[in-house]
Image 1 (cartoon, rainbow, N blue to C red):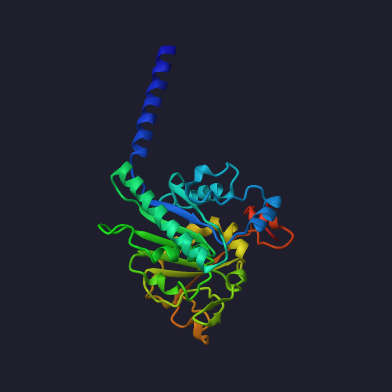
Image 2: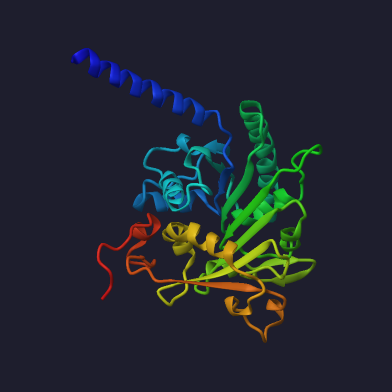
Length: 315
């Protein structure tokens, strides 16, 4: 009897090993690279006194497993995979660390580093799987402008086209990089923002001897750029809300944008029809009801940064 049981367990173990081997030899459809926004050493030090699990990864591209086990980005990768396993595979999730300095120069330097890092990563996948995966660059805040600086340097390879998808969350849209969203090397882009995100639009900058403030959305109507205004529980989201708690809903928002039919005007809500800076923008509006969603306020910074949900819905 014991021999029979041992044989069964051995066969089961063998099957699992074979399945695991097959899984590891299959090239993923997508590889995701997360690019953080503006940071400062002082800001991170202050934040770490409340949230010791905040970490953005070492400089350059690194696998998510290289972060500390308590790192929030590791949890985010699992959350995204649970929401859409086809779109987000946590086994092929990477971070890109850069200086986080608030300057055009720093973002340009980071864009070149991101480009070089992705080229190297693609070569590694090609060598291992004999196939090139699709690349998704998921960004937060000015990480989006780092990604657009990278777009200036495309293509990745002269001999073949690489499918590139950008997911830009809360990116401050600036004239310096705005037109790059229409690059022919971008297969698909998603731009996600909300009305209460003041941090997104306060970074006043100078361009061609004039001063500007960033916009929430791009002035474009190209079909492969889906721009989405997100509302949860009938209110807009702030910068910290979009950075952390919103991650749970990101897969649904992207799937909604994919399914939206541009021929049906009812799906669209055009921002500021009377405002010149918003002309030519088709903005999808996605409303979510989530009674456990925790909005950031000055009294719940640690919980909001960690994306902790409410234990009980607000009555």
